[in-house]
Amino acid sequence: MDAAPPGKGATIDSSGRRFGPVWLVPGVTMVNAWSLALAAYTTIGLLTFVATATPYVLNANLGIPRADQGQYTGDLQLLNEIVLLLVFAPAGILADRIGRRGVFAAGLFSMGVAYVLYPLATSIVELSLYRAIYAVGIGLATGMLGTIIADYPQDISRGKMVALIGVLNGLGVVTVTFTIARLPGILADAGYAPLDAGRYAHWVAAGFCFLSALIVGLGLQKGAPLQKGEDKPPLKELLLAGFVEARNLRIALAYACGFIARSDLVILGTFTTLWGATAGIEAGLDPARAAARGAQIFGTASLAALLWLPIMGAIVDRLNRVTGVTLCLVIAVIGYLCTMFIDDPLDRSSLLLFALLGVGQISAFLGATVLISQEAPRRSRGAVVGMFNVFGAIGIIVSVGVGGRLFDAVAPAAPFVFIGLLTLLVVAFAIVVRVKDPGPAPVGRTIATDEA
Image (tube, rainbow, N blue to C red):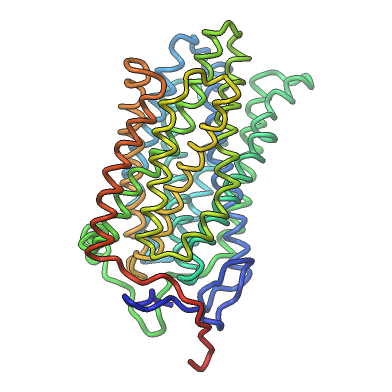
């Protein structure tokens, strides 16, 4: 069902199925919906395992001195983002030509191959090659996850769909963190050699990637979401779609929001843990306990975000999409700028401000995802969502590069303030778009019958 025209409220097409709180577009089956739910649960969780995998390989396989590990970790992350920049747009174009599920399955399969090879690396060059294979995989898989989130829900349920997928993402991350990520230590305690323990943990992660690829390949909708009798868009149209569609101010706003929202997520994970760990060491804690305090801060922000998602999803589904994303960005600004008032990140009173930071970050992500989900044209949706992801990858590179230097040179809160000020600029753009080209009015409650 296409978006409601300006001035009209979105309606529910009752010929579509209902998946929990989400109304699905006609033609999307419960098997398709459950396959998407499983993919949302596994994909993000499995891709986070590389955060544990990389230090393990640097130590157990390569014997890299600790003093040099930060440099190599940063270089691998930079390689990861460069590959993503190169993959997102072609992945979206390919999805519009052959369909989502083949690209998604290929991405999960590539992640599995990378996890098979990663613990076999004998040099930094080998490890970099395997990391590039991994990056291709997450570019294909996460690009398709975002595209299918736009494909499956009716307009009236887009906020709820993004919230549902976000909750499943979070649960997947928690599951991997407390199971596969701990497996090397469990196996080592059971008597396995450290090198073998790491390899077996990687191969368990690879097995789940392959299983997820099989389920996605069989369970998601075939082909691209074209209407009956409609031809596939020509390749030239898809190559240009990401740029041409930005003439729509709401899509241009979504790109700007993507730059902010994706960098928000990395800033949150990177600098909350670093802030807590450095403060812990300054307070006299040993590195292990200091790292645990940093993880506690990040966990507080993440838990608050997870609990806030369903609430914000329900709110934005009652608002004009531009109004909704503006509200989300304002909440993000408040969350990021409030870090200026944190004197001691280890003080329990600071946890409330870190929780507000998590709420702000997830609000920006949800608002941006809902807006691009509704505005991306059906024929070239993969290409447009791919460009949205490209802006997100650029945002990550900028935020980590600038944020790291601000953290060292100015203050631990400086990276968050930097993103908060950038978000203020996007809020100003959102207000302009709301005045000049607001798009559909707030959603209605009309039920469309099969005969309507």
